[in-house]
Image 1 (tube, rainbow, N blue to C red):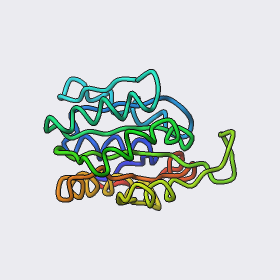
Image 2 (image 1 turned 120 degrees about the vertical axis):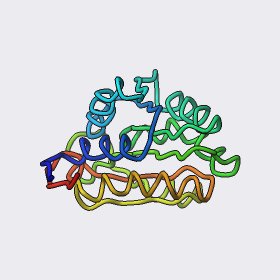
Image 3 (image 1 turned 135 degrees about the vertical axis):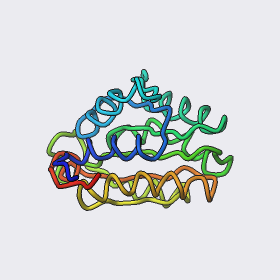
Length: 173
């Protein structure tokens, strides 16, 4: 069966299908709808909460991951600046349960005050960065990111963009 989903809805679906049990984030377009959609799975074992900032979100997810839970963190591009310290630490301390950090970049500054490229942070932290081109890949890349994270015991960044986050595509169930 196929569903017409936005990239953000597909990321939430991929997190649920990939076994994420704890998700944290800080709201900001173009990433807000990810955690909102993931919270719809709370009666199916997914804990999702907004954090006071991106650093706290990443640290909460790190604690859950080190305890063995699969985790997801969501933020917009400028949020990774706030969460840079724990990202750099996690890249060498490592994680246990899979951890995917979803960062929604905004090329062209459609809804953000600045334009950044998260791939530079991934290179600096020496962590993998996956880049989906549509909603179907976004769902699949969350699952793959969780697997890579557990295999290599490091966080994995999923870099999405405004276009992927808000456009719709058919996603197979």
